[in-house]
Image 1 (tube, rainbow, N blue to C red):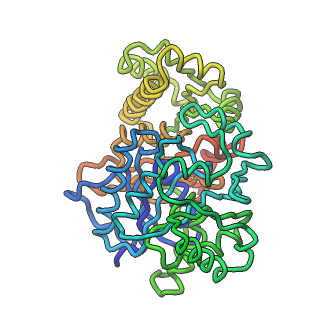
Image 2 (tube, rainbow, N blue to C red):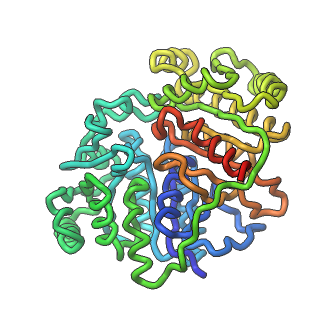
Image 3 (cartoon, rainbow, N blue to C red):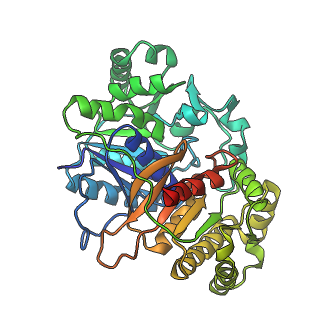
Length: 433
């Protein structure tokens, strides 16, 4: 069976977020980490959607474009009927990109002339009204995202934000039009195209709006947005007779010790780490004191492995915004981030070699570093832990793959305060069944 929907996600947690949405709406979905080389890649089974996870959100623009086009080429080779470019529900980017340049390149490669941009995800409080992005009841620019260490978001007007990233015209489809249904939305798209616009920010306040928008983009070669907009896509394919019978998501059948790795410094993760420190042994990582990354990772891994019999352990570099600024001031922003990612990657690989089989990871960049270091090429999407975050199980798509791992990759901004507990409890319940 040809792949119906091919997705390109700009980070690893965003990829699992999107895959989770598709699975919940009845699509058999596999996540592939990085663009496969082709050689040695086995059959994707009965997958109807494939999500290619990249680490392209904060890399240089030309790298993001090159990687995204490589992913598109691979997906088109699978026969995908529609392409989805997934980015964060808070539109995380800078004025240079990478959302606009990647979307431009994908549209050009697909010989398409128009796409929407809709990062709304109402289930997690991300809504768009008159083109302004809200986080809960606050404008994006007034939320904690304004102090994001890599992509501070200080403008909530998405028309302005995207217009600074592309030379193309960006229009707006307001909520009052969305409420009139798919035909009205399609008519608004046509009017914008006739006026020379290549993009449309689309308002959305709830899941019903996302379903309407999804129906309106049924014939678009490219859809861009957060995972929320994917709510409306499976229904299109089902009406077209392209999907098989839906299957229930399965909890990973992976036993063994568990660790929690937290690299995100977002507000949500800070609360989760503070709670977890009261429950389990914890190890705080100071980037300024790491020294040689390989030696530091081995030292921490030895401490963690020595105490695994007592239960889960937490390893975190999560810090308050003022400390993040101090670290970045001394090391440089890029160097600080790269050092922490390399440390966590080395740590995860050493822990895996020491017998750890269950990983809960907080932060998109951290998740990407961990998954790449572990050599996980693809994952089967399991049940949802919290909105936007499923359990996954590594798939052996290459002969050299190791025994399966259970992986929960959490965007820094996602999850309730007891997320870590809930994630591990789901696996414990499977063990007891």
